[in-house]
Image (cartoon, rainbow, N blue to C red):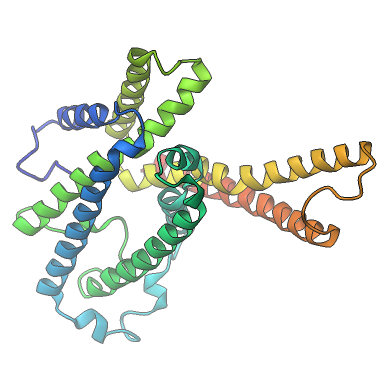
Length: 308
């Protein structure tokens, strides 16, 4: 984001290093609860970004795109038109809304952990609705200049205007304050795997810094940000979000039924046998769909990235 701004050092590696130094510092907080104010700053940065992108589109193209709906602008230009585009869309969507990997860490940092389901439902519903409206609106707005809107919006902004510079700096700021929300839960998971106790603060900091260093190495080695997000979302986040939960539910229900049978119990849960069969069938379908979607999108995204 900073390559085309006055804040760049002229070196992609140096830009990444000073950014990751800030992210690593923020990631050393005890838990994600300490980052609530920074998250608010991140939302403000996103709002500024969308506002500037919209303002530039209106300045350059006016409302011509909306007036062309049904002619030059149609559903064919607003939906993915190739397997690579569909895979990118699925990967980005899974990456953006795949809360499953960090849900327990976030829940532990909430003032009222019991309201996690309510907060998740409201937050993801609002975010999905807003992103659909804004994403479609920007694609239509820029359609006179870019009939097929691919990649991210920053690719369609000039590099020599103050509006574009503000957008890129806002996006960089948003990434800086948002990354710790992923680094901290990931670090806590690794702490548990390595047996690092709460009193060993030095080791906890080293693990989180190591995560940041690995991420910056990957980001500098792979230049296409959208492709990286798509691959991570389509492969790892989709696997954890769409395959693991229903699969674990199926395994747990089998274990509960086995224990109920051994104890000669007629009831193995709070659901009736018919309801349990419906949910198990639904979970089997979810596992099948998840495996298919994860496998295909991962392969297509990786292949397209390798070809580039």
